[in-house]
Length: 425
Image (cartoon, rainbow, N blue to C red; front, side, top):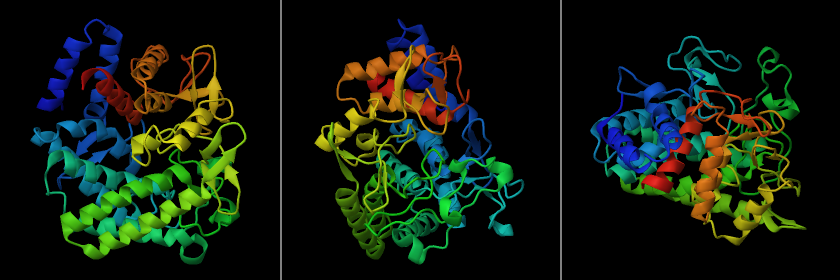
């Protein structure tokens, strides 16, 4: 299913990476992973993009899986059609249920039934995650800028953007205005605490801050404190995108103004409630807070993360608070930073202790100020792929032959982006 522009990238890689055969093979495997194995074109022109080893489409993953293709859409009509089809499918999913994070290709066969009426059988999972609404906006905006095409500005996308703003505003006052709850059925969760929300599915109490509430992290694990800071940072960025699309793409000055106002409110909350004065590292960003003075100091491999702040576009890599935060999360002070005999890096409570994620290593390279660090991350990833020449979810820091998810397209895409930026761009 390779398009002409993607074939050209592989040809260029053959020339530039010829003296590094494993890097070449792994890059090519990762670069084509999404389009070769996860994209399905539907009869209505939509694109449905599965995660890899799970036959559902996550709003987050599907956006991230195609991001590394965006630089090539202007001259590649076939590739552009695929991504435009995904943008429209995501918009329809948001309108179906803005609180859902993952969707089925067809209405039949849903494994999720709680609180869903018959017309919502297309929902695979209904974990409310702020980033799940951020990613489709980011994809639409970046595609618009890269392609120069206005064809994405359909009535469906317009209503989806309005729904994003309306949902974020509702969740600024979760307990007063939202009806969302989540309690995972025991047959699906096995009683895992990370699979449900405390307080009868409502989450723990929060104070108003201006930030918007999230039930779950981008790992799909439940938040401890429900103002998830990296996701709110992402929301600030995409609300700027949304405002511009509303104004220039739809001529909707009211939606544009609403997005700008909401953006300022969330950013105020981050600046005044999400910065923690650490005794060793100085001012750092917390991963989560509740607005009552409680903080969760950690980082998770999944993006948005604190590590990814410059990648998201919230702050530059040279921002002093980000630099302090980066030193904290890449140290043993981060409870999910692991050091073993084979590797060191950030993992996640979503996977076993001592398991490092390739997504985190790729993101460390993508946000590095020094090109040598980016190359170091690439070499580390190649040494920890378990011989598969593809990315995994997590791997054992002492024995990379032990890993989770042999087929993880999001991680492949992020690695391909890192290699392209480092060696081919």
